[in-house]
Image (cartoon, rainbow, N blue to C red; front, side, top):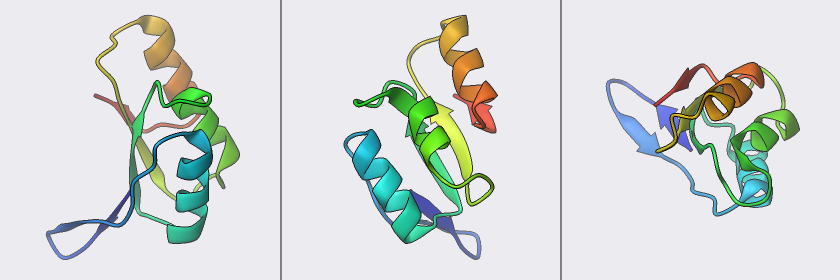
Length: 82
């Protein structure tokens, strides 16, 4: 979870699973979330579904290049996939 500043990136939180990610996003309101597509507890798409739309920008991260992973997370609202 990150907050962007004047040319710097500030890491404001981390999460180990979907539940802790949703709680941290709702509490910290970061500008950008670097989101693991296969986060335990339902994955990145579940985090996006459970957080307030438009509050933050999600960028999905994964070692997977499987079409279903890329399409799934982009369709739920991620702005990019790395």
